Length: 101
Image 1 (cartoon, rainbow, N blue to C red):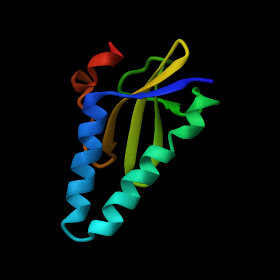
Image 2: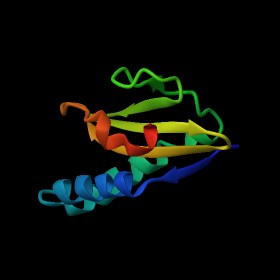
Image 3: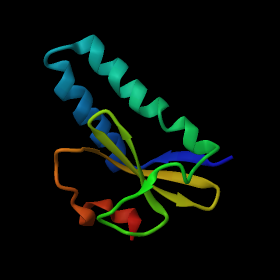
């Protein structure tokens, strides 16, 4: 079973998503972010489930699509490192993935 590790960047992304949604729907914001986090649980058993991130093109850098969001992660030995949570309408800044290199 793989351990799920959230980078500081990914945690900051979740907080920004929560804050944005909370402007209109505070209760919904917490629930939405919780669902994003919970959606990565499947990666403990199936780390290769997500698609390869096309902008990166490396087998170990993958993504889960949840609603409008891309949860981008890297598969390591015994772990899955969540690198960022990105809105799908935004252009992915590959340079911001730090640990993907």
